[in-house]
Structures are given as C-alpha cells and as structure tokens.
Length: 159
Image (cartoon, rainbow, N blue to C red; front, side, top):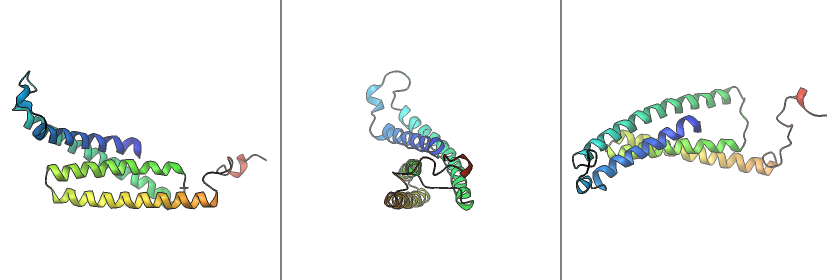
C-alpha cells in the first residue's frame, strides 16, 4: 500500500503547497527576471500545480481502492495475520488526508472537507487497531518472541 499510495498523496500535497506559495508567499514580481519569475507567472504556476495535484490524487485514489480491496479480500479469505508491517498502512492514508485537506483549503470545497474528515477518521481507526493488535500480540508473546518456524507450514518445520 505504501509503495503505490503514499508518494502520490505526498506529491499532491506538495504541489498544492507550491500553488499556495506562488500566490501568497513568493513575490514573483519582485524577482522580475527570466521568463518564469514574473508577476504574471504566479497565477499560472498556482493553477498548473492544482491541476497536477488533482491528477496525482486521482491516481492515488485508484491505488488506494485497489489496495483496500486486496486487504479486504485477504481478510475475507482469512489469510491475514498481524505483524509489525501493518503499521505502514498509516503513512498512505495520512498523505491522502493531507492532500484532501490542502484541496479543501485551496478550492474552498465542502466535498473535499467531507473526504478529509472521512480519511482522518479512517486514519484514527487504523491507528487504534494497529495499537490494539500490537499490544495484544506483545502481551501474548507472539510479536516480539515469535519462534522462527511458527509461520511455516507443517511439512517445512524443523524437527
């Protein structure tokens, strides 16, 4: 999940930060050098950054849904077991939430505010579930002191 979803969400949020900075914090008119650093370029940089961020976020949503279906299928087939690598599911959800938050601010969109809230709630549930499973498996001794051949099929276990 992290490999497909996280970088696109982070890049989308960064492009939106560039869009905001081009209009508010960067004084393009004061530079007035070259073709790019002109006063008229700030609005173009802002618009292009937001469009690029939306494209990246669309790609991000596609991979998020694919990963979510993969996780749900594994859970339905009862093929999932808990280990510490489940903590990597937090980063992609957080980057998507950040990207939606930036879009809700820059576009003043109630729809993106709702999506941001939904992703933040999903992030909170994900975080709490990871803590719950981590503490449970620490208390039972399955997480930190797991035997090397416990996850192996019976025919491959050492005698």
